[in-house]
Length: 216
Image (cartoon, rainbow, N blue to C red; front, side, top):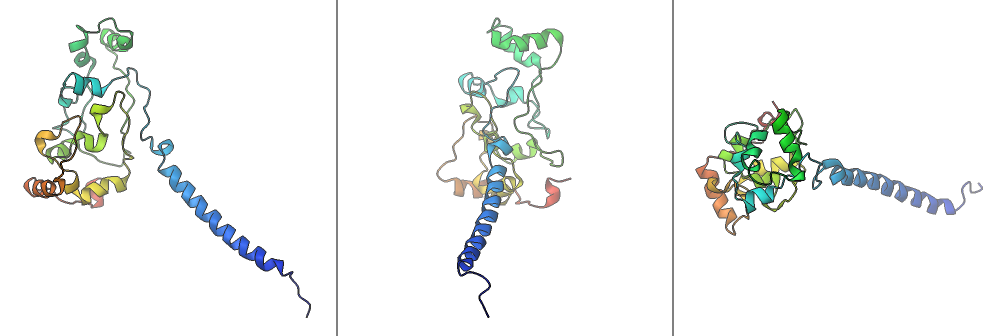
């Protein structure tokens, strides 16, 4: 019986099979890379704001406590945004003619709130309570990044569910003394593992990973 296919077809078949495998693998890798990139997660990007507010200047340089602006962070699920009156407490006396602060003065004069762009926004189907995390020794910078080093605020982490669950599974790696929760710059001590285990027991922290903890 004569040979139907040329011998080169063996090589072509092998190359084709390898090529398809590489192509499929490349597709999934590309999808994974896009899913974790700032283009999709918006992490490390600085959204345009009506006023270029600097956490670094206000919290580190001026020593203003987080709770002065985010007044409900200890009692509510929402940390709260300061009304224009809070800004004008200081800026009616300093930087009163700054062009950069014109939107603040206009908001105060007209009573129309500034329209800030949310930097860290969770989907509507996710429940997150700031007050619970604060009381359990989870600091602002754990989720929001080193705010004291941010001249302009950006989103530090992806806020993906696996990122949240990692903290819920291993709270000892992230918990800190309650008096350090609002530090704008915080570096875990060398004995974090030992300290973390102690605080987890003291604060009665549970490693909750049930779906209904966050999805209600």
